[in-house]
Structures are given as structure tokens and as C-alpha cells.
Length: 330
Image 1 (cartoon, rainbow, N blue to C red):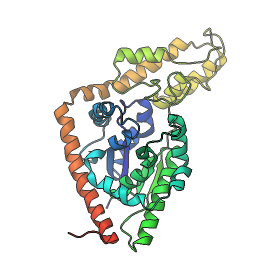
Image 2 (image 1 turned 180 degrees about the horizontal axis):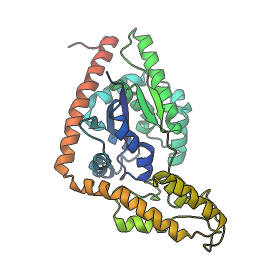
Image 3 (image 1 turned 180 degrees about the vertical axis):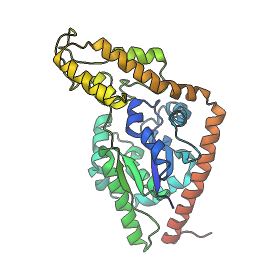
Image 4 (image 1 turned 45 degrees about the horizontal axis):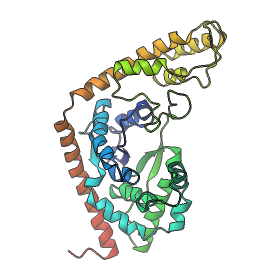
């Protein structure tokens, strides 16, 4: 039996090259090794987009289109919509009784995100409790592996605490602990060089960007402000063009030679940007064409079939949980 892996994304915008490097290309490989579930986390997105739900709704199929376009195969991966799995909400309610307010407040990920979103004293309860909801997501599918970034490690820790407490309290082993899977690839910097590539900062190249927009973004990339003439020595560190070439240019020996030439002087930024544009156009063209070939009907069918399968699996776990608690009456 293959081990179970659970991952997903919040549908708050199209996916970009940062997602591709950090998670999507891994999922394409992992789906052949694991029994993979990929969740479109619309419920979690609504914890801070509750006032603009249409933004979340409009992006659900957009994200699923990105999944299919990069090579995630619905025959190998169960793609489902979080809100269509009612067992997840019921599990969340039961798990809430096992976690104190002070424990959630100490969660470093929650603290950081509350500060980032500037909630102040107006933290929605749904947002505050989303680590408990994540525990429900993980345990419902008995995921043994959960891909996360380092900033999300406290969420896995909290989920495992809930598992241990539940199993101990109710004298069962129906819930499984999960291990974090850290991506072997680091975060991709934004095209402005100031932060990681991000949907919210709009400093990313998106998987559905047109060839013209890709070119425009590449030629606007931050390089070395002191590299004014091609003959000037240039810096590699902090140079966004080289960061993207490191991630996507497959000719590593040639790239090493380009770096040496740039550092010594004699290589212009426009030459590098032209090379990067060619590399990204080649990478993204088939993804964009595949994306454009998918109809709304195709995407809804994928979501429906995946959600039906996920619903059945999650319900089975919920039945086991209620049995352990003594509240499965019928």
C-alpha cells in the first residue's frame, strides 16, 4: 500500500512560478510514489476572505486548471474542494475541545499571520482556529506525509498533538500522526527582488501569463543596480535574473560560465534577460496551451469525481472518531 500524502492551495489567485518550483513540480513526481490528495482549500481561504467570497469561488477552477496543466493527473491524484467534504467541519468541532486558546495563541505560524494581516483585536474565530481545521484535513485522510514550508512546521506539530490527545483520551489508534515533507527547493524570489514571489504582492510570473506579459516581466526584473555598462563587474547575489536562471535553465555548466563572465565584466543584463525570456517561454508555453484546452465542464468533472472520493474517505474516518467517542448511534 502506498503511503498517503495530503497537500493543497488556497484559491485566492492564479498559481505562479514560485508555486511551480516550490510545490507543483514535486506533486507531479510524488503522485507516482504516494496516494496523493490535493485539496483546494476554499474554507480556509474564507477565514480571511469572508467578505469577498466571490474572489475565492472564481479562483477554484483556475487553480485546478493550473494543476492539470503542469501534469498533476486526476487518475493518480485525488483533487477535491474542501467545502464539499462535510466530515471535515464536524471533525474540526470535535478537535476544538482538545485544544486550549492559549495553545493556539502560542502557535508561531498563527502569531505571524495575525500580525501580517493586522487583525489587531478583531481576529475572526474561524481564522484563529484554522490550525485545528488543518488537523481535521490531515487526519481525515490519514495522511502520513504533508508537504509544507518551514514556516508551517508548527501546524504539523499541533495536528500531531491533537492526534495523540484524541487517541489517548478515547483509547483508540484511529488517528495517525503525520510527518512534514520539506521541499528540496527554496522559495523563488519575486521579480522585484524584494520578497518571495507572491499572489498578493503581484510580483510573480503566473502560469497563465501570456507570452507578451512574461517578456515584459522578465525585462523589468531587478539585476545589479551598479552594473550600468556591460563591461562593469556585476553581482550574482540578489540578482533576480540569475535566481530564475538557477531555477529553470537546465544548462548548468553554461550558466556557471555566464556567472563568471558577469562577475568579471563583459556581459550585459539584456543578454541575460533575453536568455531567461527564451527559457521561460519554452517552459510555460505547453502549460498555457494545456490550460487553454481545458473546458469548465472538464474541470468541474475532475472536482466532482475527486470530491466524491474524498467525501467517502473522510466520512469513514469521522465514523471511526464518533465510534471511539461513543456518539455513533445509528
